[in-house]
Amino acid sequence: MNTVNPGATDTGWANAELYKLIPAANPQGRWGKPEDAARLIGWLATDDAEWITGKTINSNGGGY
Image (cartoon, rainbow, N blue to C red):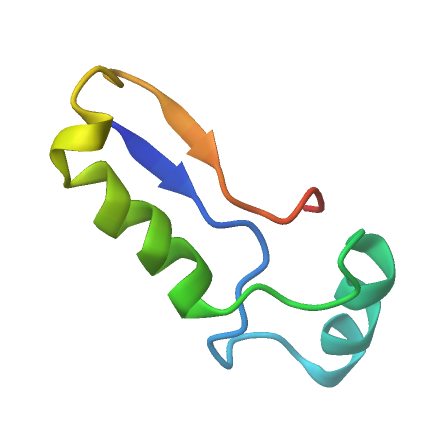
């Protein structure tokens, strides 16, 4: 089994102050989107990822 750490993902949970801070702390200058993590999870379900096992994959754009 693998797990994905999506980092700060914009799903509406953050307050206004935090919402402004995350882009400045992220090298890509934005919040993650749910589809960013979904693309990785979709790929992990393919045969191309069959050799990846027991990992936590950080999909956080280089930020938090």
